[in-house]
Image (tube, rainbow, N blue to C red; front, side, top):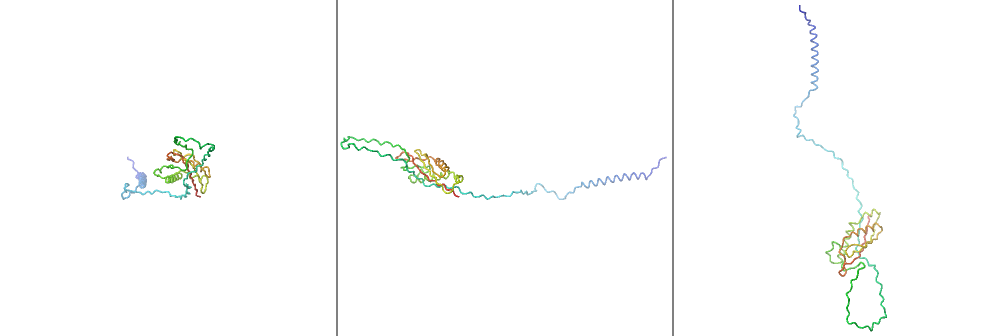
Length: 239
């Protein structure tokens, strides 16, 4: 005899199974809902034609007005003048007075010897041909050559003189620097003497004049001779 199945007990077991299956389905659908992505119907833009304007930040410009520096001291050169010759004149020669000049025999022939070349022992202040500064060679007259030389030396001194000395030495106003020098027989500057209110000005004047270029020497009777010059330099410091 077969045992009779209880339909209620079998239904209870199936209900538990259905409940478990339902919970699993609910959890699955919930997870799918979280992971669901929505897509826009519009086609995506082509990144190749997308242009973004990037504006770089520019730091502000600060413009500082510079103070105008005071003008440098001016150098004014007066006209170059020849230096007076301070060499002493030779002493007078005493001629004896007890000679008998009446009964002298008359010579048959007098032969005059050639005049010996006089040695040059001092610098000239006036010569037949003045020294010629480079750049003045085309001029022929002495006055034109002297004027050209004065202009050239003035430009040379203004370019090379250290004008900062005025500030460094605390100078003010106009300071006179007198320079005396000799253009020797080779056309070179030598025997430079200076006089100024400050030793540094004298030193600087000697340095600058000593750098003057070689010149064509002055001539007397066709021979090269040394020639003396004097240059007053006015060193003007503007307050």
